Length: 342
Image 1 (cartoon, rainbow, N blue to C red):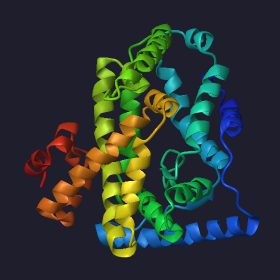
Image 2 (spheres, rainbow, N blue to C red):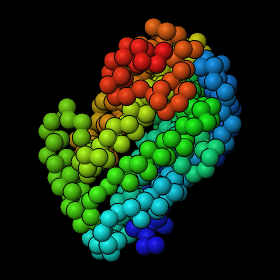
Image 3 (tube, one colour):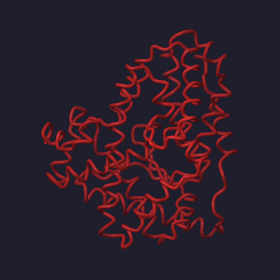
């Protein structure tokens, strides 16, 4: 099979373009790794107790920025390599137009940028259990920027990621359904290779111009999809909005009992998400990060509304099957989901 992406180059590019972390002595760095592992274990128990879901058994890895990027390259490779078969037209057209090395450089550049931003992640693509990644340099750097209590901030972030680990660990069909929806998104692609490349180029131009309009919702992902793909993407978006919103709701709700400054942390983090410079805004729009930030807000509001109305035990009906997941319309109108499912 023709390799559309030079994955080794992607890893090298991410490592080269990734910024260095905060200055820490070796003893302090080792202590931070130990504390993050202990905090992740504590967070796992707190999340299970609050949600009533089975605790996660996924391994916890405390990583630096380069290791986070490398883990995500492997995850992307797991998903994207099989999808190369599903691009219609001769593969050589895509390879000739874009080139595996250029694709590797582009992916590496995006991951290099994100490696300095991401605090933690539940990486779901690598194997069936997944892995909980905590990016120690970013957690320390962000805590310093926010002037927050390190113990409280560390626990708060671990609560969010432990919730994701709990979602995929407790709901046995979720990972398979998530991957099948990604496959459905790819399978609906009727674009030939050259058309796909041209649409990506056109999308970049549109998005660059659209920076003047900060209310826009589009990303490259939106603009390179066909109408059929948009239906699959809407289901994926609804699922991700639920997962992110649920994690944000749980981290704040549990945090109210165990982290004294959780309200201040939320206000500071939300303000940090909004206060991006023009270059950061451009990059975030191009890679769809702004859409992800909106998922936190919309999803958290949905979960809060449903739990307030019917309680968390009945809310957990959302995990019964793919059919009980909310649509995007229901996320905007939680009462509609309650009427249909609960």
